[in-house]
Image (cartoon, helix red, strand yellow):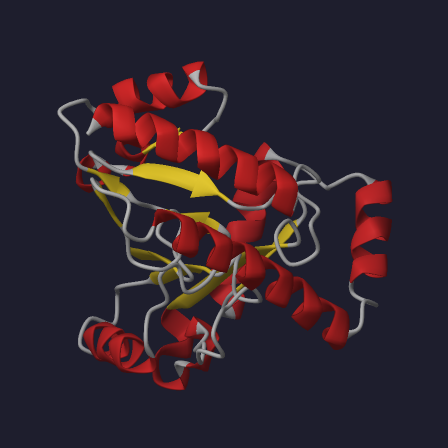
Length: 223
């Protein structure tokens, strides 16, 4: 099984249509291989970039499992409402495991999900633009800071800068917390995340700007 998070957490990067088509070719030549696509942030894409869902890979539709959630698009984090799209045989197997482990979700969350689906597309687009405005603040604030390198996030609401310091990601996270700004250690996301820090910009602008000010102060002390 290949597991793909697109747009990515923690990097905020988006896989291009060309990359996904190459992935489809791998699946075509390996018919027993499955693709589990986590597209939780599919509605939060910046700069007008095109987004290709794994569900659009029609040549390998029976090998694709889409996993998504109401948490990000509809700001229902913590409600634990999600869904899976898969071929009938795969869906039946997933349902068997799910009902044995989790059971049905409670009624009021299902009702909230039904209301969320009534939200107009224009409102969802406005929400994405709001995230982009905050993304722009992060990029502007961190660009040119000595000791920091970062690819601008293309989606989701995270930035994943690399801090060029002798400290580990875990140690840097502690230093940031001591300065009053909470971030995630890059090493939580695997060995290649070491040296990085994940920033969430899913907050109000005033809090974000203050957090970034503290963040930059700590970076300067580290580098």
